[in-house]
Length: 191
View 1 (tube, one colour):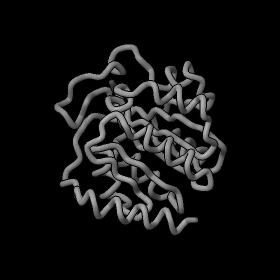
View 2 (cartoon, one colour):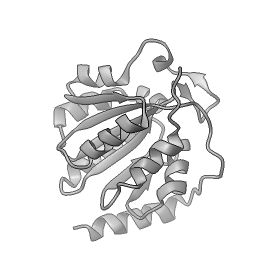
View 3 (tube, helix red, strand yellow):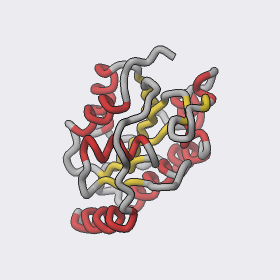
View 4 (spheres, helix red, strand yellow):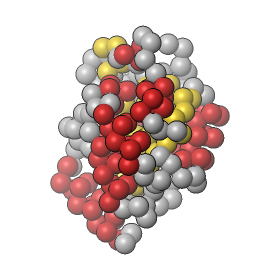
């Protein structure tokens, strides 16, 4: 893999564009990056739920079509729940964007290679499932254009972002109850 874009840079690039969107982040590194770059009440951190970020985001998008939902998932996590891509394609929520940090390894659990390190493409799998707006990006410029699209165009979108391997320094704040309460209150206030 020759990706030079980091998850940190990719998360910050999104954070610069956020206004009133809900952001659902995958356990571990994705949530840590989001907490460090843009901790906000409309962030939904999915602690201890590997494989479920895309489904949680889909549920939120279907329940609240008035709110744009951006999921920050990992390649290893999404590979555990590929069926969510079929459901996203079938339900086709216009307010959903699934962004996948694809570093080709299970970063949080020790760096074991995922299927995307070989021949699998999550964007191609999403297209095969029926998601028309499935993109694969490798550079900060491409990612900036993808973010601009997912924040203004109807979806659903699946954006596979090739990022460099590496762990984020710092410690994840795991106030599960506090963050869940804060998120519910912020989402209810958007009614």
